[in-house]
Image: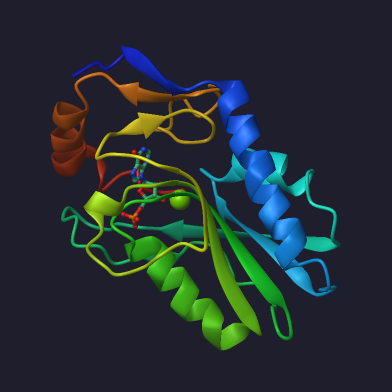
Length: 192
Ligand code: IMP
Ligand code: MG
């Protein structure tokens, strides 16, 4: 199935405004800290990470990590790292994610980091609470959305649409998800 019809959900200026708000909270919460690491979850969070980081007024180091969410032909959820974890000893880590969907990826990463760092918080551009299969509450959320498959601003469908400057819903999202479930989840859609 070729999916090319996009419905804009959030325009670029709306996203920017929300990121400014998140940055405002972070600037308050981390104002006394000098050991903060912003951990970008590749690839989907790159645009959010980059825009957010430039709005922060405290010193923050950059680190990057790759997580693969699904492996094999089943979407049972068995996340694993695709890059080495940086040394985060003594650091306050802010995980910067594109989207928290079922919560499996974020939960896996958070649990892993809790053993490696002093403090771990989760900041995400998007969250789909109705899709959770694991109880995880991000500390900072730019947008809560319904059960829709979205692309743009870093998020992809089959590695496509990442560089759209807005967030859009793939038309016929339900069909797209079914399609992803059987064909693409085992390939690269869920590989950040
Ligand atoms: P999880 O289900 O919370 O573990 O999310 C796994 C990954 O699925 C996310 O990090 C995204 O890369 C991808 N994902 C989930 N929902 C969407 C979506 O609506 N658009 C694009 N990617 C998505
Ligand atoms: Mg992600």
